Amino acid sequence: MTIDPAALKRFTRPQGMPFRIGKIGHVVLNVSNMERSVRFYTEVLGFKVSDVYPEEMVPGGMVFMRCNADHHGVALVGSMKERSPNVELNHMAFEVATLDEVLRARDYLRKQGVQIDFEGRRRAGVQIAVEFRDPDGHRVELFNTHYQLMDIEVEPVRWDPADGKKITPWGLPAQKKWFVQATPFEGVAQTAPAAMGEPMSLERFLAEQAQKS
Image (cartoon, rainbow, N blue to C red):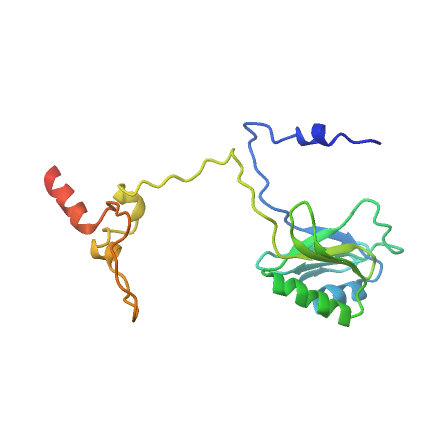
């Protein structure tokens, strides 16, 4: 089937949808050897086991694993009879904090004898990534970060520096000197800022309150 890239790009989120998906919550994979797969995701990728369903609850058993505070990011079901053909799932990706971690992960995976399919920069998303296989042949990616896009449908938060209620929700505003004082550094001359606004200071707040009373 031939695709039309321009036509596909015209598909978008409809206006007025009553919900917005924020992120992928979890992925559930069928595996052929539960112990082997749990060992891979814990000892090689660093996940922790959160819960286990016995075979009486789910045929083949089910293991829930986490990589952060969420209960599970990956779950495994031991119902697969043979290696994954990767027909319906192309790959799944996990984000790490830095480029250094991607490179360290690549070296670590090689030492563990993991099959690496790709390493380098991807085009869409421009992330630096390493892609490899889990014991059942599922394709997994580790990457540092996607570049960020601004969604014009999301109303930006607007802050008015003159609104004392917004900048000091916990109480009275700070004294004026808090906005102008700075820590001196040896050998660096202090200069006035190129532009100086009028933030809501304690002195200004009290003066305005006195005028209202």
